Length: 169
Image 1 (cartoon, rainbow, N blue to C red):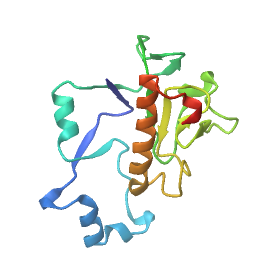
Image 2: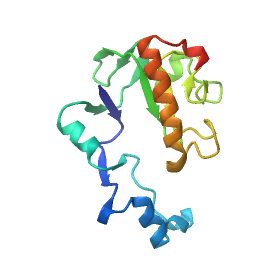
Image 3: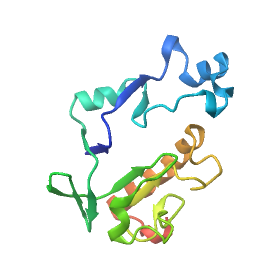
Image 4: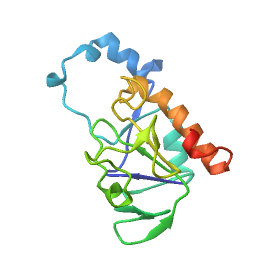
């Protein structure tokens, strides 16, 4: 399994002092600060209780620089290497930047993914997380993306097992 990202991943402890980070955001008032008062964090911050760092350290996945494009069922990396992929899950964040999907026809005229509830309408095995209004108004927030993630990952797993047609997901 490969995790492709634009920048190296920076892990942030999910439970400092034994409490979830979101508890501390609420307790300190950080959650209520206006966006203009908070410097945007790097896109590569990952809240982690230790399991993701451990999986990376143990070689259960490897981190690579973001692929340059998708070509059919292959990811094409910046160095030109091509790897066959069975599924791709794009955790897009607040402002999707998906130029590598243009040639696939996976984007509409506005550059937004052709998707329903986080699953590509054009390419089986292609899923999205973090899109605005993907499923609910909170889909592009930390609090809403978890529910979407469970649904999208379950649908991609069914796709990989071949147990359910993608169009019905």
